[in-house]
Length: 342
Ligand code: EPU
Image 1 (cartoon, protein in one colour):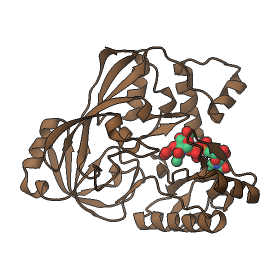
Image 2 (cartoon, protein in one colour; image 1 turned 30 degrees about the horizontal axis):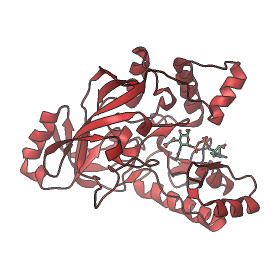
Image 3 (spheres, protein in one colour; image 1 turned 90 degrees about the horizontal axis):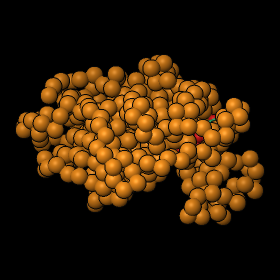
Image 4 (cartoon, helix red, strand yellow; image 1 turned 30 degrees about the vertical axis):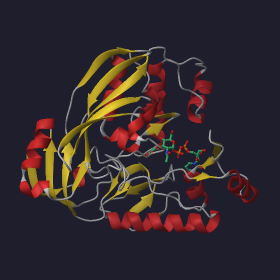
């Protein structure tokens, strides 16, 4: 275990925002977490768990004790029913894990290649892309409750996953925000694998290449390619992926918007509601490529806010609020930020 005081955080968040943490504790094992909780000034102060810092906006110095989870390890556990169970430490980079599963000839995560962040952050945010969500593959996970220092294990159902949401993002009641440190996650990968196609960008690849029944490795390569073309690399241009969730509307609201804006990109959901493409709404309001101070809207994807160099969290949030206001004024829709704002 390693405790750093007044620790700089700019290299620990993909937005590249400069801020400091009162204490930064790097934990590489469960033992490290228990040892940290023995420290008086850690036990009684608020805590924040940091994965890859890829879904975070820091609006100032952090008074919390920040736990940086660096628990490693990946292993195949064996068969369970129709699935092969695999387990990874929470600190493993998500993309490395996806790559490793394919090397083991265990497909099932390929649509989620290249998502930034760690394995431990995947369930918090219920990451997803190209027609698949982490929740569909998560079997169970282990963690430590930082409030009472106890170990816990949760099944996928107990994580109460929603769209970019889980019990780990919610506070109050049953919520575990600010208290659960995930140590290991287990995934159930299907033994009878079927490609998950149907997402427009993947369909276009099939069309362009003539490859009608791609294997998992092919899908992995396509997804990596598509993401590289659409999303900025945080190492070059600070960002936290999609900044807003795609809003959900009722069929009546959707009809009303289509009446006014026939081009609006919308998808029917299994529950009868419609999801609108937030990127399209923001783009339609003329934000793509715009800048406000040192923060801006990515020129190739309006859903991604970027740090053009030295932006503060305040500048990012000012831009986010201006976008929310203009989308609300034009479409009557309130966009909800996806990242955690601290
Ligand atoms: N669009 C525009 N202009 C833009 C951006 C998008 O017109 O500036 C349109 C696109 O043409 C497309 C539609 O909006 O018709 C949706 O865009 P896209 O397919 O790129 O996906 P998205 O809805 O913007 C979501 C996820 C991404 C995920 C992709 C692929 C959310 C909030 N975002 O983006 O997830 O990678 O689908 O599955 O659900 C993330 O959560 O950080 C993230 C990157």
